[in-house]
Image 1: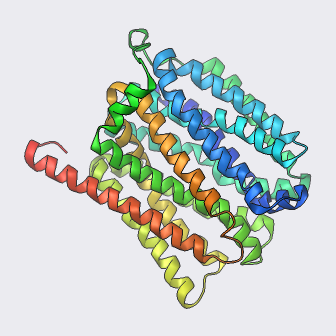
Image 2 (image 1 turned 90 degrees about the horizontal axis):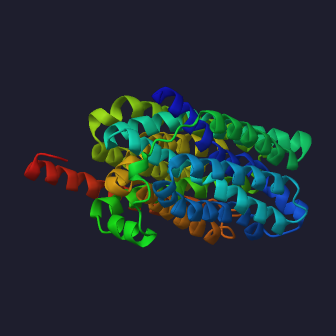
Image 3 (image 1 turned 120 degrees about the vertical axis):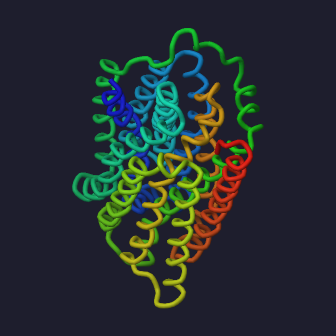
Length: 397
């Protein structure tokens, strides 16, 4: 039963990240075809993140009220409709609109998946199960940019969105037939308002620290993957499909980190896992800065440094997300929604703010990554200190 749910959740969760990343290699192509500026075409990414965040903001609370299954299925339907709209888009504005619909559906998956796992497991075990879901889910993002790069070259960029339409239709059939409801009837309808749930979560310091860690991690990752296709083309002079090939390194590294999390995170403890992971991310970005300042980065050396960063993120992200939700067990769906919304909101603002700055120079990207991930490390170390003090005084971390 639990293994089946793991696979079902992974199938639902993969759609959002897959759609976010599969079209990245053709961003420069879209800019040229529609005759718009980079900051306009970047809206297809930044507004995708923001729309997903808004959907996540309400979907967790709705799943607390009406159950996990109907909200998850609604998200898949929206994703399917948005994917088809993108494939048919005649203008950049139409494409942006389709991406917003697609994101609204794709954003629901991870929130509801975390809530489902919180229905079934305590926080430490939930982090382990979530790592397993993400590890399985990585098959899509691992092959997404590579597939998108070659589909864009061979069949045109619209074929990428038709592929997403077909995949989401298959997932919808699978979940309709197999996904059970995990929230018992007596626990539904207890949510009175979003404001009450958010106030409850925001009033807990540990939730805020975990949210800061997950937000900085997501923002750094989204910033890198959205800007690096332009850096690859204009700074490193690499072809479109090269991004997809190198992106596999990041996906594999993230998968390794998730695998390590499934094996060791529960033993090490959530706070210590998060602290160690954020230190690894910050060190990796610092190495990239040092290489660029001395001998100069190549596309390969940049992705090698970022592979260490994404491995570290894969290791600590499930614990950080599970830790945030675990601070508000009585409102797990709402806490999951708020965590995801904060991640998406800050990421969207950051990505769009740097859209015009990152063109022919890599320095704005590297410096911003160092600042964002450094802030996450500070929050993680504060969490570790807080947990150590709590253990010393109460005997519990």
